[in-house]
Amino acid sequence: MNITKTLDAKGFACPMPIVRTKKAMDSIESGEVLEVLVTDKGALNDFTAWSAASGHTILEQKEEVGVLYFYIQKA
Amino acid sequence: MVVNIWTAADVARKVIDNKELFILDVRNTDAFEDWKIDGHKFDYLNIPYFELLDGVEEILPQIPTDRDVLVVCAKEGSSIMIAEMLSDAGLTVGYLAGGMKSWSMYLEPIKVGDLSGGGELYQFVRLGKGCLSYMVVSEGEAAIIDAVRFTDVFTKFAKEKNITIKHVFDTHLHADHISGGRAIAAATGATYYLPPKDAEEVVFDYAPLEDGLTVKVGASQIDVGALYSPGHTIGSTSFIVDGKYLLTGDILFIDSIGRPDLAGLAEDWVADLRESLYVRYRALAEDLIVCPAHFMIIDELNENGTVSKRLGDLFAENHGLNVEDEEIFRSMVTDNLPPQPNAYQEIRHVNMGKITPTDEEQTEMEIGPNRCAVR
Image (tube, rainbow over all chains, first blue to last red; front, side, top):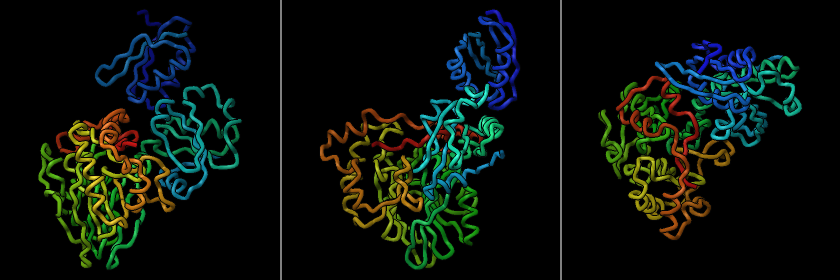
């Protein structure tokens, strides 16, 4: 997987992780991949639903020592 | 325009007073469909906040201007953002401080009725979660039944009324919410009772709550008598208060009956459930007022916000009490049950004293509706 950009949204509470992710997605090209790091547990459902609604694809997601990682491919 | 800050207590008033409210719920559709703020005259619009990041113009025509509008989310952050966007667009709206989390935690004490000798029965209505706790008050003393975990609400209430909490009961080992019973007893020196059959795995000391046990509350000696009524759990016990009120725990609700599967033994306990509902309760006076430990839908609330109804009326109207055929009954309470409450196994372990999660973890465990009933 080729990561174009990484967004560190650790420590931010809802809605900031999604707000920042959306901005970061606007700055990359279709097909490119954004890596997002989040600590807010509510993000788990929000990222899935947001991606589905906006057409982006979550290629992979994982949790490591309290940090959620999302790899989102721009539609 | 201004953004108003609403507390869960403000919302509870709207529910209890039967007022109109328009709720813009900006959580995920799944979360909204699973669990929302219910009111008799509430209208809803559910649009996840992340669909409004580019602006709220598109939904403006759907937001009424002739009544209060409240923006709600899980914790509050997104609702503040959307409320400010609506405010910038010229609307006057509010957001719920603390979001659904604070709604889940809010308790409203409401008097159910008078007891002999000047005593009173109070119901603590947890609107967001459908949990009902009780306090029997009589001349300086109190007994508490099925307390939820916000123990300071009960201890403050007792302090304001200048009463000493003497007895704390749980009708059964709860699976949908974390009990506050043990903590209240520890803080006040009261005795904490649990049915021994539900308490085989608990890791603390308790007084046995067994059939026929009667405690007297206050100088007027109000009877709180235990009646063994298994079925939701094997230990489930009801109470008759002052010969007037029947506290049914999770065995009988206003518009539904208890489910037998939350401790993993649905098939085994069906016969117990049937015996409790169709034999033991049938032998009681029909004029007893049933006070359950839960409500499931807002229609179960009385006009004053309490949840209670005459036993005789429930025999006539509650579907779960009117299934003549035992096989149909068995199938009803074991097949196609609703999903189990969120984290119900962990919640049982907390109530057994086996694990002690942080406050925040406890809040997460209790998110969502209670789902203790079969309809």
